[in-house]
Amino acid sequence: MTSKPVGTKPSAVVIGSGVAKPPRGVTGRPYAKTRPGALPVPANRDVAALTKPSVMDKWADDAAGIRALEAGDNVITMFDIVGEDYWSGGGITAKKVASQLRAIGQRPVEIHLNSPGGDMFEGIAIYNVLREHSQPITIKVMGMAASAASIIAMAGDTIEVGAASFIMIHNCWVLAVGNRHDMQETATWLAPFDQAMVDVYAARSGSAAKDIAKWMDAETYMSGSQAIERGFADALLSSDAITVDAKAQAADRDLNEIRAMELSLVSAGMSRSDARARLSKIKGTPGAALEATPGAGAEDWSGLTGLLSTLRS
Image (cartoon, rainbow, N blue to C red):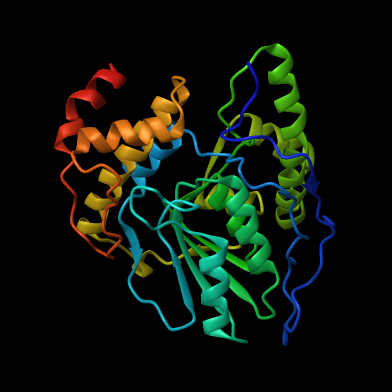
């Protein structure tokens, strides 16, 4: 058997400079922290570093449906998983973010972020796109910035976080199969990416790299106040800037169930394409995606109830 972290491992990795540099075009009072340098991304993007099902569950319990009360024309909303989402047709991608930045133009940007994460390498790509924007970026964590979403948050010149919100960091998580030699090869391949994240978190927060590595090993959730204390955020976000959209919450949770189910099936040894085919068959509409409409109501996933109960028992 060969090691396969959701795809074939790339033969080369493009490593960024890792050197902190200030955002270009910033005028007025300088920021206390500067955006760290670019992060490495695989030369071959068919490998996916994913969010664990347990993180998806926590997001569904604590952060689903949390939205901003207001949004201006210089705001980019990120209320989804990181990477393209097979089940909704949505997802936060570098391509979409780059397009939104072009539409905003040479103006300060505000990011409203509430995401359980997703594909870490897509999160790195989004981070790299944001750090190249020439104007200040304010990131507001409304609910959760977990896993890949925490990397995106580090692109902010200013990071605000809700008092009841969380920033979660952990090591790169992939699905792999094989013998001990394959596992060692995969671990060796992943190590530079974990170290690159440590470097970025350390540069942005000012915390010691060895402490950050331990927090990543432990899969650490930081509350708003703790994130500020450790330098991962700069200020608390006013509670009156956040609301919970009941319809969005229901839709978020329903989508999250099917995403977590897919990951569970893949973790059990099924290929991603087979898992999606099986779940689509149970749903009754093979290949169909949910409508990615803001505020849309919940889709009927009642056919999955028994399977979900079985897998969780």
